[in-house]
Image (cartoon, rainbow, N blue to C red; front, side):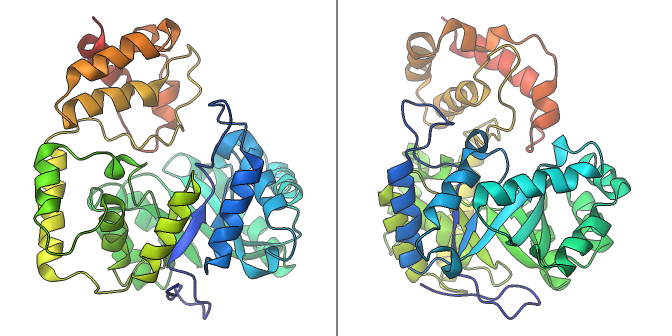
Length: 378
């Protein structure tokens, strides 16, 4: 395992962090984690050198924190730093800070959360938390040792990101970053700004919700195959992020033991400046090819779910994007008709707007659902 720097701290994080948002599940139920397999995966990652595990209040319907609490028994807890997040959108009063945090510590079976984040800050949630006194509350938790370090995760534009960074002496932040999202949300400019202010930068969605690992369309496959050094699509994406000196660690949401094994091997090969200039230019060409093919910037994070009407938004978007990016609309239509229940299809949308308020990508979901149904319905 390679280890990196973390902002102003002296702690060295593993290049790879374990993101517990996409754990293996049973019966296709997002809230029913395969306890045995997930535990073995977490422990295999730690045995392979991972020293940072990340979860949050809503992951797997609240079961992710509980899973980690159990998986980190038998001596594993003292070998890692645990990160979880305050559910900002659920906070209504100052008393909620302790209410949620105390429940999270119970779920995680720990008195101390090493890295605590305010989850999904944006121009709406941040002023609300600030006015409720979240920084005063956090200072108290830092002083008495219940929190080791305070940070935030982020989904909004660059100006909002800079304002939040400037408000407090944060230890770290967490941003979405991959070779497709250099100009999206915080992007490369936000990464540079946070690092210049001494923050550790944790990267989420390095594979863009798995979309960068799917079978590549012809244009992209041809580009990858032209590389002198052969890598999997996942490794290309991960190595691109690890190549950046301002990145402290990269989170990967893993749902199979093979993902753990492959990512550990990739992390062993990682390093700042490990990609040559011609390889970086190749990634630029791949980015341009993808952008010309996949119209909806959905990462499959499921923040828009559940839809009050039952629309399976992320699945609809995945089928629409696949049909566009992989030039196979007929296959997407077949899946839409055969494998999606009528009540899950896009025409059930009543334009209530709840999904758009929750979407961290700022997608015009309602309009895209209309377009997707027009394309995918027979």
